[in-house]
Image (cartoon, rainbow, N blue to C red; front, side, top):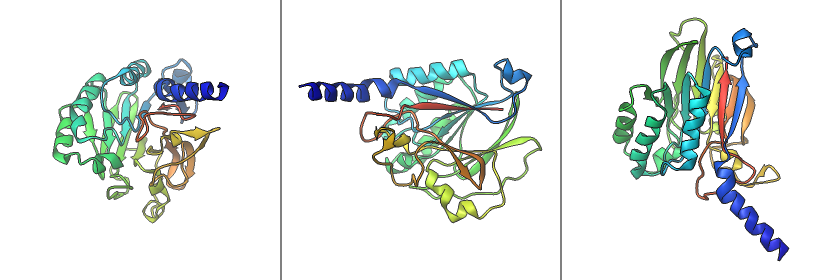
Length: 265
């Protein structure tokens, strides 16, 4: 009887509590200065990964509230923003909730697998002037506290990523590389370059989504040996794999809280 009660409580926690218990993790990537010490970083990037948007519910509202509180200069949507072809109106509503903040997005495996019409997806992003979908492309952002050149790759698991060398960016520009599936960082394409990015962002793994004492029971194809958090990489000064926000296949999380990763300079 006790074991049954504990199992029910654990299942309820995994289904209703942890998926909405969003953790904000702030990483400082430069030496502390007076501005940062006062709580105002020179430049702030917030990563939202694996949203798997299907409706605007309490979790999505919490994300928008946290973004409003964090006041990032640039938001990164690192793939699997939607996983259904009929979710484009939800994506449109979510982008409105970001209130015009500069936002860059890339494709994940589910944008490919769900049969999302590429033209309709592009037009949804285009309706928001401060938002850009990058597919093997780059864009230079001139922000209040500095400049960021964002390189967005197609997804490694379901697409065809093609890396171009950083070029044409002014000095003191932060070079940002975004690839949904972290296993790409172990490929020859990632290794065969002299470029070194200031920050590389990935997602896809959900931190395992369901873990046992913090150890993932499974991670999806395209994860490689990555689960979540910072990793060394010859391509990046910092490679960060987000646990993401949403869920996939099973609408539950256990030992893998959703997260908003924040990077300050």
